[in-house]
Image 1: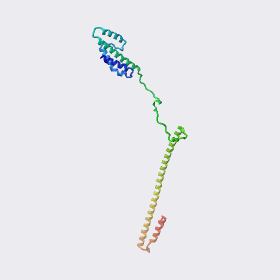
Image 2 (image 1 turned 180 degrees about the vertical axis):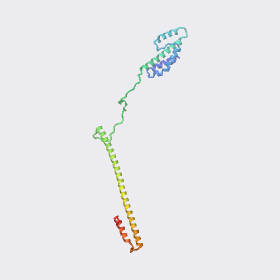
Image 3 (image 1 turned 90 degrees about the horizontal axis):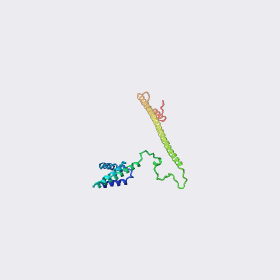
Length: 225
């Protein structure tokens, strides 16, 4: 037990500058307190620790067989004092937790990549950085406007093509309806003439006149009344 107390003292003295000393030796501090209570020794943290130590030394010198007890008391006091001093020093060194306001310089990362220029001309005159940035901005705006204009032109061309197709289809439909109407009239006239020929009355055939009328209709697109 004396050897363990001496080892505790040495370890406490070697780690006295640690920021986590209080947490590392919390269990040992409690164990030393229980051991001191069991041995009826004073607390070295109190102000009367030195007087109690002197009284224990006097009691240890009385009679025989008290040498081991005196060594144990001395080792306990040394270990307890080392742990107490280390804990007090650790707590004095600590500062309260607080919010830290980081500046832009602290948050900024150091860039090790060189800045490359897209239009670098060896030996040529370099333009200022602001002029190059403005030139790039204008180029992006020009490309955007060109794409928008091309898109509008495509839409206009598609609309005009649809209108032209609709007009062509409407004209073709009107011409087709007119031809059908003329052919129907011709067939009606032919049927009437054939009926008159069959009934007699001096009509021996009117095919020539019908053919002339059909030829005129096909040529002019209009029937003759």
